[in-house]
Length: 312
Image (tube, rainbow, N blue to C red; front, side, top):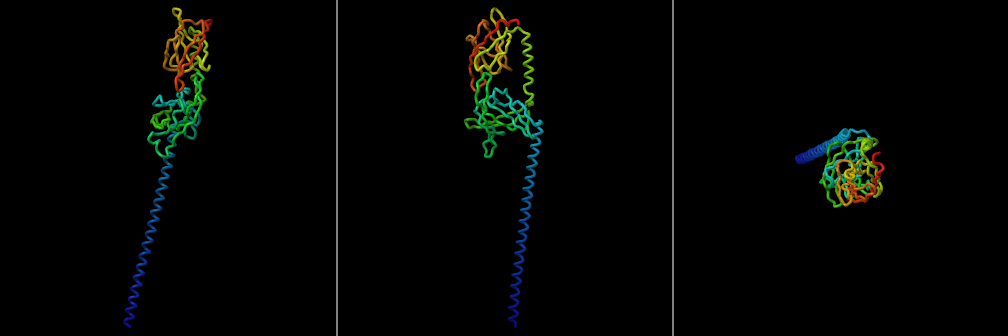
């Protein structure tokens, strides 16, 4: 009987130990599950918070960009300024590009002097080399110069977030090397109004010329698209007629007449030369050098004066 009681006691103790052990394990597992759930929920909440903050920042940035532009949707003609003569607008466009604004975003369409610049990047050159950098590819456009010559040039659509302030714009050329540059977009004018001031200026100049001693002339040669203002001012001294010749382009850097080389007498606007002619009774062959294209070209022209127009 005593042995039976002892055996029963041992059995109960073992059962009790097993029960206690099992309860402890279950409790630990439940605590781990709860901790894991809390951690996962916290991570999810943090990720959602980061996403919301990012979206808010992007929205604010877009709003600030639109505010800095302060332009209604539409097309404009704007000046595109750079820190280098090697990186500039094609000479046919007088330093200007077409600025398009839509839904608070803006792009300026710029045309380069040639096809040498291959890609652009808004930012620094070191960032343009990184994986995932958003590079701006070029398109090819045909440009026609004042003398009628035509060639291809690369064009780009550059995003603009601010006016009248410099921003970084890197470029890569045919040699595969990135270069840093600073650019600025200024003076946007509605495309419909662009050129109206020039027209008024031309009318004033024409009126002024008519009130001075002038002589009519005609120009032949080249493609036939270049011209010289007629009538032209002149002064006569000792049988020599010094005629003021104003070209229809600012890109003529010298003229050769009777073997003599002459440079422009002005620095702004269309190229102006003061050339002495020994006679105005017969056509005169001259050479004018244009820098409008990627390489300078000497072009031969014939100027014919109308002596009968003097004093009229």
